[in-house]
Amino acid sequence: MLPAPTLRRPPLPDRTVALLLQGLLWVLLTGFYYAWYNRPNFHFTHAWALVLTEVSYGIVLFNSLVYLVIPRWLLRRRRGLALVGGVGLCVLYRFWDFGATLLMAHFLPATSDLVQHMQYYNSLAALKTSFSTFEGLISLLYGPLVSTMFPVIISFLAYALIVDRRRLALEGAQFKLELSYVKAQLNPQFLFNTLSQLQGFTRARDPRAGDVVLHLADLLRYTLYETNADRVPLARELEFLDDYLALERLRYSVATIGHAVVGSAITQQLAPLVLLPFYEQACAALTSTGACLTSAVRVEGQALTLTLTRQLPPAAPALPYRSAPAVAAAERRLQLQYPGRHTLHVQESGPTLHLTLQLLL
Image 1 (spheres, one colour):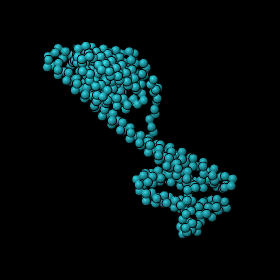
Image 2: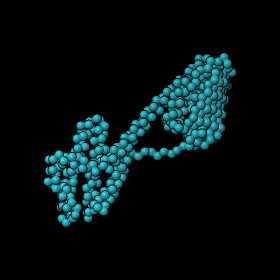
Image 3: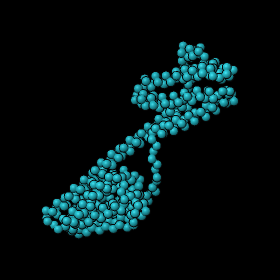
Image 4: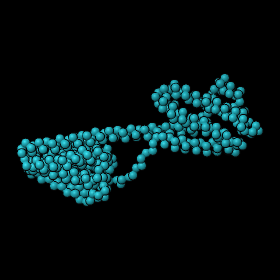
């Protein structure tokens, strides 16, 4: 049984994802810092100013890591620059706190417990000590980690998500290029075979050449003008197969070719020319009298089942089927356009070939 089709929403642009992640980060950081600076044993009257200080630095830290330190230095193995950048962010945090202390002292009441706390830990003397003593340098490096560990972790996770989205975008572009290559392999093969048929009838002055030209015109119109889209109406694709098999009956008059469609194709769509290679390779061996090819396409809602059976006379040469380049290219195309939504079974036993293909449209 084939799995039920799932609807996939198109991915959001990278810029939108980055903005949403940053917005979520600031909301989480604001709530975290507000709770942290309002705990029972560490409570200030104007805690919002301290929260604003930490969140504003978190914004700078996040963008510095995600857009500069990680992608441009760390991942490009510029470890020296990455180390300098990390130390620079720690030093910046110390000056950020010092600048916030000056602003608090200017705008908040002098009696505020927060102002007194900040002036005690971020005085000019304390700032000089941070750069003049060994203990000060150590605290300068590990001190910011306590307050900034949360945004640092979020920064790495956000960058990992952005990298994964870019990887998926590159895989999508590679998929389109590979699919175009596979289609380019299929269409010329069909056209060359058809022109070769017409040439043989013309040289032999066969009266069937006129019918070949009419069928060929319909086939060329479809392959040249209607197969550029990713999907085409299933009904139109089935009409194309009827024209193709009518042309093959003219070419292989010594063989019997039967085809039937069961079910109705109204709104369903299918990748263009995805079924044709299986017919082409099956018809290639119908050169002996008594050869027989029967096919049936069953349509049930969004499920399509193709059944091909070919029986050759015992003395007729049996051409390789599944290993043929056209069939291999068609299988690859199914893997690209219907991943997890198709099953293909091919049985080759001497002069007998049986193929069953199931597709979820």
